Image 1 (cartoon, helix red, strand yellow):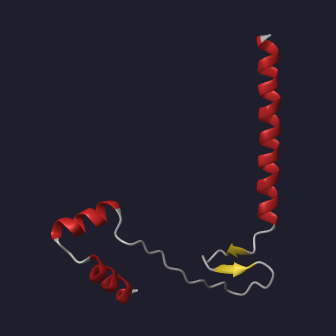
Image 2: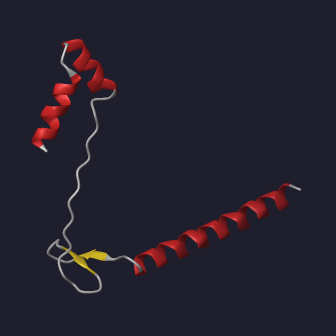
Image 3: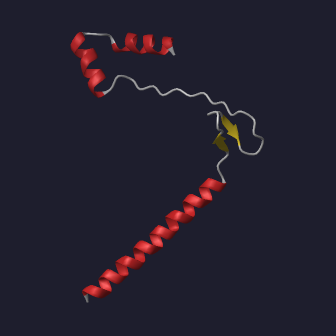
Length: 86
């Protein structure tokens, strides 16, 4: 009984492992950008330099929110100052 359970888990593990390896191989072949030896991101199909712009911003939450409140800082003004610097 225990042996059959172990065999089932073993085969399930093999199936999941094969699926994972196949997904990794497939995603590597479909990557639209790569990094060349000089560290420059390039488009795979044209070898032209790929450039992106992005910003992550969070309003003062959790610790930042509590510290702003403890210091009596106006949250709206703090957000406006942060956004101004972006």
